Structures are given as structure tokens and as C-alpha cells.
Amino acid sequence: MGTKFGFLAKLNFLQNTASRLLSGINPAVIHNIEKYLALKKVHYLSAVEDIEGDYLEFGVYTGSSFCHSIRCVDKLKKIQPSVNFTRFFGFDSFEGFGDLSEDDIHPFYTNENFETSYESVNKRVRKMVGDMEYVLVKGFFNESLKLGVESYGIKKTRILFVDSDTYSSSIDAFRFVLPTIQEGSYIVLDDFFSYKGSKEKGVAKAFEEFIQEGALSVRRVLDYGMGGCVFVVSKIGKIN
Image (cartoon, rainbow, N blue to C red; front, top):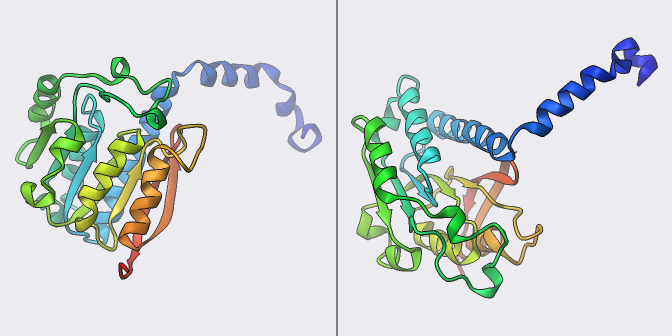
């Protein structure tokens, strides 16, 4: 390295400065910035493909990603006017996870870390949404989703963002949205490698069951942040 890159490779203070800067950044900040970039990309990609449908987010928390998606669509209107028909649906208990099964227990996924205020989030969204249509649904998924997509008038999903962390909440979200999935639907998974990378727990397990139940073929588009992944549905097969 030293002979190839010359004296720059020997300037330890530059490397130390970069290391101190990067190591001092809160991981959540890095994750969120990369998540915003990932969402911007999928909104753009689905817009240029003129994919119809709505934006569905499961695990709204403080509403940051939800609001960011609204902004992304607003900026894309000049490129693809049809995105103006996008509706935004956000689902969250706004009370944390509730009672977790043994398989869903995780040291970071606690009610204390993820409880927020529906009223505050709704106020935040309402201030910036403009003339776009949105719905925030309060409730644990096993209750709020049990009537199916028809109860919300959702026919097609353009972008699905699952940030609900645990297997039980994620599988409820996936099964709810499955009838609306189409070729070209983008799926953003925020915690794909949780539970020590296990494929038998969390979002990863729920996503695999979702693919099997829907006879879906998906392609991995990109990774982001501290364990987020984006997929696109490339084909829908016949369900046996």
C-alpha cells in the first residue's frame, strides 16, 4: 500500500481523523440517512416504471420515513405525474410491541424503545402532506389488519416498507398486503439481519414465508444502513 499510494498512505493523522469522525457518528444517524436514500431510489425506480398503487408502511414509529416518502413522491411529480395518485398508508400500534412470544424476544425490541404518540405523528404528517392522501392506522396488527386490504380500499401496492422488526408483526403485514402485490412492487425490509442473522426468526423468516405463500420471485436491489435490504418482485407464479 505504501509504495503504491506514496506518502498519503503514511499520513496516519488523516486516517485517525477519518476514523474518529466515523466512529463518533451515531449508528442510527447513518442508518436513517442511508434509509432515506434507499427510499428515494425505490420511489424513483417505481415511478419511471410507472408502477401503479399505494405506499404501505408497517412500523411508522415517529413518522420520519413516512414523511420522507411523501416528500419523495412530491418531488417526482414532474418526472412522472402519475405518482400523484399514490396514497400513503401507515400502520403502527404506537404503543410498542405489546406481549412478545419467546421467539420474538430481542434485547433492543422493547416497548420502551418504540412507544410513540399517534397524535404527534399524525400532526407531523398533516403539516407537510399537502393535497396527497394518507391514512394512519393505530392498533396492533393482529387487530388492525384482520379485515383485509378491502377494508382500506387498497388494490395495488407500489412500495411496501416493513419496519415492524419481529416475526409475528411482520408476517401479519405480509399476509395482509399479499393480494395487492404485483410485478414491480418494491419491498423495503429495515431489519433483515436481526436476531443474529437467523433465517428462522424476525423479518427474514416472515419474508421467506411471504415469498413461498405468494409464489413470488424477487430480486435483491440494494442493501442500506445497519441491516436494511430492498427487493423487487420480478414475477408472480401460480400458487399450488
